[in-house]
Length: 278
Image (cartoon, rainbow, N blue to C red; front, top):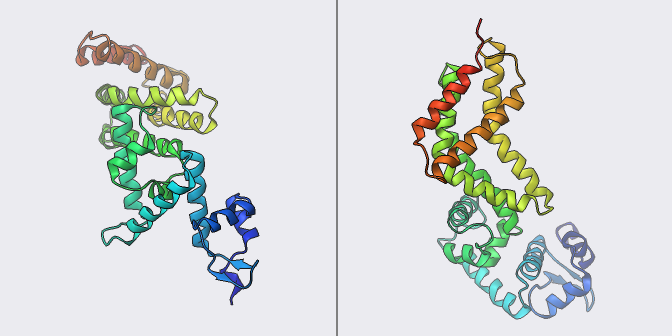
């Protein structure tokens, strides 16, 4: 036997964080089985059993699922893997989960969207879900990247073709205004979770803000360097313009005041007031 290909129960414990006694219990319940047994107390396992144990751990910790239900869940998962149309563990399948969940988060909100909602919509087992994501929080972080990319990436590319920096900033405000309802929903969810002492969500909140504000800051830097705008701190001005855009969008979308063009005209006036008067 080539021992390099197999793992002892102690190695399983190290790789999964599951105590040996629990692994033995899972084996007795039929949730896992050793690949090779060399005696009453010695058995060797494969990497596949590591993945299976991590999956069981997720179902226990995230779903609080009883063992008898995990047995059924794993059977459904194995059946899915054997289906001819199964995509297996793939980038396409992961992207499908992200896209579907992003829609659910946008429609229902983070708190009201359960993993059961997600797997029901996708017609997959929870076991398959946990192959791709450790929990709902991890999936939400991936969804924010996808949603913000969908909102702004294409229009950002077209804006970059605009050579007039002031006009480019105005076009950014226009694009943000159109995307604001979806952006507001996702950012409010992210803000709410970020303040709940969750470092990962706080970092994602910062990244999401930076994704929107950083292009504005770069435009302000160029405008200052070229002498178009007065000497100023580009980062402070970038965030100030972002705050202005957000709350003037609230006037239209939430308070029902002013049409988009009125708001954009005011943005233009502010930018022109910031230009050099040499």
